[in-house]
Image (cartoon, rainbow, N blue to C red; front, side, top):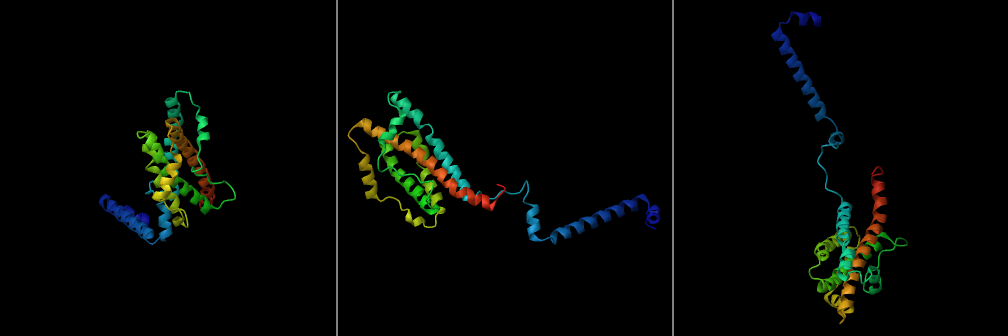
Length: 226
């Protein structure tokens, strides 16, 4: 019957019928999409071309850590250029002071305690870097790391449960720290300044490794496919 009906239609009527049928099909599809569950709609828009969400805090920490480590990478080269090979870089380890922060152990330490030690150590380094600035006020390394360290401290403290346990050193504590580093000998002061930068680099590298130990299992648990 449908075939007979279509056969009797002229070209204009047949075209009009096709347009009406297409409009009806589009309306039905739109209605089905509107009635779909919200979670289904969300799933359909989560593929390629969707708006990216803001990166998690951990991602920001990785970027900050990498920038700071990269900035200190050139230190050994600058040291060797200054002393023209007359002083071995490895000798800086002998100029380590008791005021230098201790890295976070990789075992027998809780995540909170590790984060506390990392944040507190970086705050101490912000004070120690003042000694570096006294000897090398035009240091390109200092220009790059001075704004980055407070940012990293803030990001670490956001991951802590008791961030109030990591206060900034008081003015009297800063004065005491810097007094321990002072020396009437120019060579000794400069070696101390270089030792601060060298140990800061290793503190950052070890700190990133320790943080990864605590952060990576959590992320894998949340997203096993990552």
